Image (cartoon, rainbow, N blue to C red; front, side, top):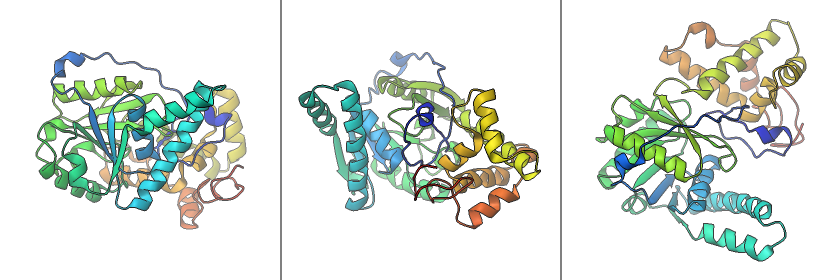
Length: 335
């Protein structure tokens, strides 16, 4: 779930759906793409048209994949298309600042790679890769993949973009656990270079190689992770953010001073409280509560923090609600 972007420190960030990393990840991972040449992913179907789903669709389309974006209704798909169009306009202006014709051509070419659908079965019949980016609920994801397992071609790879749920548990709903992995993109997807590629104990080497190759073709930097809580980025960042809350709860410092200290002392573009508000306090609580229930992480790292629980109970989720550790100028506004 959580990610932030280095440019947030100097630009107006889009609303965050989940992920949070304040550090640019630059680890490269070599891959033998030839090991799975027969797969040759060309057609990608993405379930979910929110910020994450739309971002994944955009990046895939920009890099010549044929993409189908699927959601429950036309209204949701229209919002997803609007997200993509707005993002592409920014990209086009940056790439062709003085040429309106080239800007339009770039946008039109990318949008031509994208189809939309509310028919899950029809959208899956030609897919080489299916990426799920829907609500963070294990049962809902399992139900989706159980259905898709019956209608998607046998060769189709399945992936979840989850940031906090076990990939292996989601995969159990299918009969293709060897062709199931995780592709954890970070928000905003068009800007963030990192993708965590998660392999379970049953993910085949061919499937893993193919997923790494897809990320490279999307011009992303993939890193390999085992199927453990939080993978790499969130496993490090969430405990860090929780300890920041404990410092404030113990009265040792204010949120403002902690943020200043981490920005000026550690070189982070955002302090932990700014980052928590950006990501969503409800999202943080959801992740930590889930990890504590799993029992796979040291209890001290995921112990409840009253300060966080109270803010969430009050409906103060951060930037998206207009109030968190800091007040914001309207829902999704600036401090």
